Length: 346
Image (cartoon, rainbow, N blue to C red; front, top):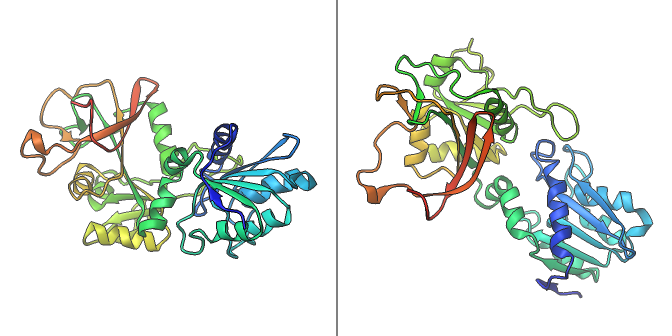
């Protein structure tokens, strides 16, 4: 039986990066399945790629193997997530890998799904296939963060999205907030919706803005329109509201996340106003903050702040975040932050 090893070969990093790039094409297509990429390298050095498509279609490994055909024998398969070993909408991918007579499989991250959990790797080992685990793990942990958190904890990854002026206001004194940012930022926010399994707002936002919360203007990797996220309201929504049909939930926010997890929501986008965003923030339930910053000033203290409710009582109680990415979108900036040490932030 071959042993699992973390020994890397010279080309492992670049070929796994190729698989990660391939997986990105499936981000809006594969859910609720994980968006996975694969690269098959034949003994002569020819590469064949695959990515997981819509549910019920071939997974990344099978797609790469199909393209390689008989040339897969003796080759190396790079895959961003451990191959599945259970029957779902499609047969187990490990069966296809073994049947193709692949000599080596390089896996970035093992699958925490209880139906897999290392069993896919064990099946490959039992068939005499060399398995290496770990190359590209950092990139894949980030790329598959919603899926991995859901499988590990039963809860979705929580993303809070807010649009704000330079002086930290999300709405004017009269409650109006459309539009703080420009068209490019708004289109990017629609892609963020498309990446999410659910979009959540408070009942107050529904009454004030009557939003549809649908994905518009975004095309998936296969050229089709992406699926629409589940629409969730904290509280009650009028039967005639534009958000209908929706799921209405209440109570403790952790219980809300547990319920969404049971509904196979791997990522929830919190688009509610400052009150809902502030509640998730104070409860320590936010995994990522996406802030769209407009070069505009409200010019006073009577507008709605970024987060409502009681804040830090002293400078030592600030919630320190890690600045992950800043992207210019037209005249606006998109700022991505996660929990971290906050080193370098003021």
